[in-house]
Structures are given as C-alpha cells and as structure tokens.
Amino acid sequence: MIKNKRIGVFTSGGDSPGMNAAIRAVVRTAIFNNLEVIGIKRGFEGMIDNDMIEMNSQSVSNIIQRGGTILKTARSKKFITEEGMNMAAENLKKQNIEGLVALGGDGTFRGCFEFRMRHNISSIGVPCTIDNDLFGTDFTIGYDTAINTAMEAIDKIRDTADSHNRLFFIEVMGRDAGFIALRSGIGGGAEAILVPETKTDIPHLISILEKGWNRNKSSCIVVVAEGDESGGAYDIAKQVKEHFDYYDTRVSILGHMQRGGNPTCMDRVLASRLGVAAVEALIAGRENEMVGVIHRDIEFTPFEKATKHNLDINLNLLRIQEILAT
Ligand code: F6P
Image 1 (cartoon, rainbow, N blue to C red):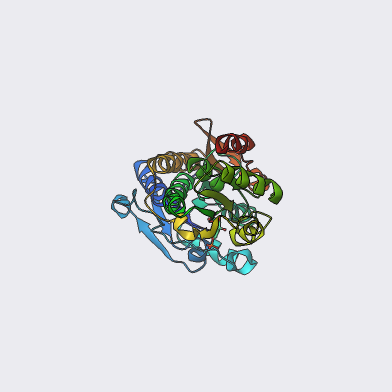
Image 2 (image 1 turned 90 degrees about the vertical axis):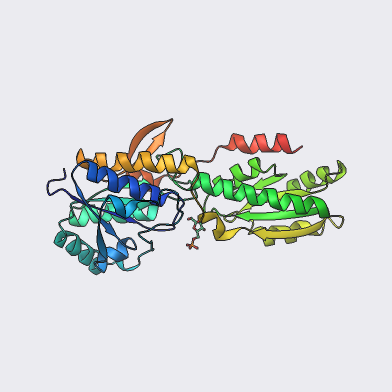
C-alpha cells in the first residue's frame, strides 16, 4: 500500500511506440489520486545514478502521439550487480519512492522481481515491446504500431518487386518470436512467412515459390523473422536463390524503423488503459505483477509467471497465410 504518496515511473529495455502514452497515463492517474510522481531517467541506470525528475501534468503534455520515450531507456548491466541494486534502492529511499511503475519487457520485470526480493520495493509492470512475446497479455504496447510500419514497408516493396519481377526476402524484427512477421506478412499478402516457432523447411519454401512462378506471379515476398533458426534473410535468400534464375532476388532488412514512429490509436488506447490500471493497482496494494489485457479485460500476472512463460503465436494464422498465398 502506498503510504507516503510518492511513486516512480521508468522505461527500460528496448523502446516501443506508445511508451510515452503510458508515461502520460501513469503521471496523470497518480496526480488524479493525489500522489506525487517521479520520472526516473534511463531505467535502472537512472535509479543507480539518481537521475530523477519530479513530474506534473504538464510534463506529459503533447506526448501521447510521440514514439520513443521522454524518460529515455537503457539496458543496465550495473543493476544486475548487488552494488548497483543497493545504490538504486538507497536513491529510491532518499526520494521517498515507495512504489514503481515499470514500462518494459521481461528483462525489466525480472529486475523488478529481484528488487522486491532484496529491497522490498513494490512494482507493477506494464508490457512494452514491439515483439509482443510476453505471457499475460494478448498485446504489448508498441506491437500494433510495429506491425503497421512493417506492413507499409512490405506494401512499398511489393510495388517495386512487381515492376521488376523480383523475389524479395524481407527481414522484420523478432529476436525470439514471430509475431511481427506473422501479422505483417498476412497483412502484406506475403507468399511465405518464416518464424522461429516453426522449423523452416527450405524445399517446401522452394515449392511454394515455384508454384507462384508457374502461376505467372510477377513478384514474390517472403517475410522472415530475424530470429528464424535457419539464419537471417540473407542466409535464406542464398539457399533459395540458385533455384530461381528467372526471379531477380533481393533482400531488405527493415531494422529499427519498426521501433519508432507515432503510435497507432490501438497502442495509444492500450497504453492509456494499462497505465491507469498500473497506478490503481499500486494504490490498491498490488505488487510484483504485470498488468495486461486478456480478452478485452485487464488482468494481472505475477512477474515470475510472466517472465518464465512465452506467449505462443497463433499457428492457425500460418495455415491461413498458406491458403491465401496459393
Ligand atoms: O524490442 C525488441 C527488439 O526489437 C528485438 O526484436 C530485436 O532483436 C531487438 O529489440 C534489438 O534491439 P537493440 O538493437 O536495442 O539491441
């Protein structure tokens, strides 16, 4: 339970579009409930360096539409050490911060869990990652924007691929998961989608592309998740290329453009809902949990569970893609 009426908010790990909308929701909900709110810069690094600022309603004006994070973010190696964690706890205590709202992914929540075990500092996590691979929520903040960014890029590449009769391998983000590849690939009408969750069958891929060629398709697009076990888009293109002397083959790596940009309405609303719920949860005395949305409702999942399990991709979407690409 928050007694001294002071909470902290920070963003940590890879940024994602919608983090600013979530910061805004946290700050305004705290103020609405007569709490003071401190913004901690650069995640756990800022806790260790005592890089914190007091926030008011105006500090979060005009940010709901902006990508990135006004609080900056980092992956902290120092926080994993006992010394780093002790320094962070000391600084939070000096600032009278009793509870934290942590915006990030599983690394962030693992850090929060350890912090609670060693220093009795409560936190509630808000899932922010473009990868959507967190257990305990149907969608993470940033995912919807990232899939739309990737899909728009696929559309643009389709225009040029079609004009030149080309086969394109487009690599999208997703170090451990195929969520971005799956949705952006279906939305972009890809001929094939390769994800880390399933074994990539190169002869099968070749037969799909051959079928396309035989049907006079003027372009083919294969969307590859960066974490696919058969290598990145360049490796897969190399393995497939020699079978298709009739297609001119190209590779395009979309990279970090997928992490930026104005969040979509879906991400802004999700961030607003989860930010409000996180502060209300801290006030109600909840801790050590991630807040998410499951089947439209707000649900809480203990950090231990959220970080141990992976959210599974919907394999049925892969089947749908195969049907629609024929
Ligand atoms: O935010 C998640 C993610 O986008 C992964 O899909 C990707 O592998 C990783 O971040 C890259 O992040 P960075 O360049 O910051 O290490």
